[in-house]
Image (cartoon, rainbow, N blue to C red; front, side, top):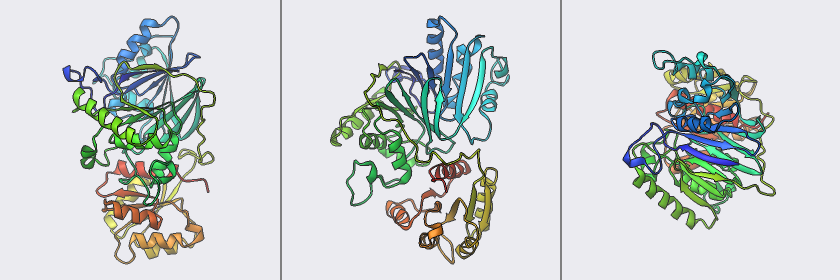
Length: 440
């Protein structure tokens, strides 16, 4: 399997003398298998030089599979310049996460409306198909691809590519689920010691990979002011990759304000951290032009999802109970979720418990601060009853400190959304929480 970076920048392209080494094009990675399958991970501005190279070496029709993590502009803005799509006889299969508001076709056509671009999407001569992906295992060409939702304000998928006896994992636009990584009193560096189920699941997804390509847009100091933006600081993927037995870690999605010198300093700090963890892992910051043939191993680990029997959001209607004693907040959350889910509501913890004597929803969204019964008390009550012992509970809270987060997890909270939050952040967190839920 051959891997090459064509775009490593996040948010916006940054050409200029300060980005000549690590690159100024936005996200795009090329993977080519021994059988000739071509996978393009994200289609930022790096897709343009990739397309030029593909056309230059093409001796027969090009069959490209584009895997979009999500459809924010820095991940799709190179598609109008992906020249294989302008050639009749070529095929382009575009894959992306289900559950977004607007199909892949609609989103890509929107940026190619005549107001913005001289050629509209439906005028492209190549045969273009669109595929909405859920979490789980997919076959794309001859390649086994596992998909898993990431923690980002928009619906975003990470991809695990398994082919030719090698494993490459692409995890861009993701941030930690919890501000605290390790459980108290346990040995750091083991997946089982990770505090939050979402972070634990994230580490398992990258386990034993030959190469993990991971978001590392910020320094530790920058991340504190940019939580909920959907990106990581470099220390998070280094620690998880070491715990997961990853062989190489490429840090990517470099911030547009970081020049080559700044990114080089992040690389030095990430390598120093990796050296303290006592694991053999090669860490580097991705740069345009980096290329590697990943040699096959005798027995690479195939990813097996523990939620294989869980239907996707497109296959069933989830029921969510929202509990909040503030009528305005309650109405806002209900309106945000009812487009995708069956939503019931309760204005107090007592009312919620009464409703649960009947049918049990798939998930609850509970405000922490309520007058008669606070959210933590409600969760402890739920966990004491066999039929709601494992019911996923997403807590709405204004608490961001580690002690409060730990106390919530100890009480049985499944996940948090910290106020103030945007509607996309809430819906993405709900979707990810449901995806982690075992089938009932």
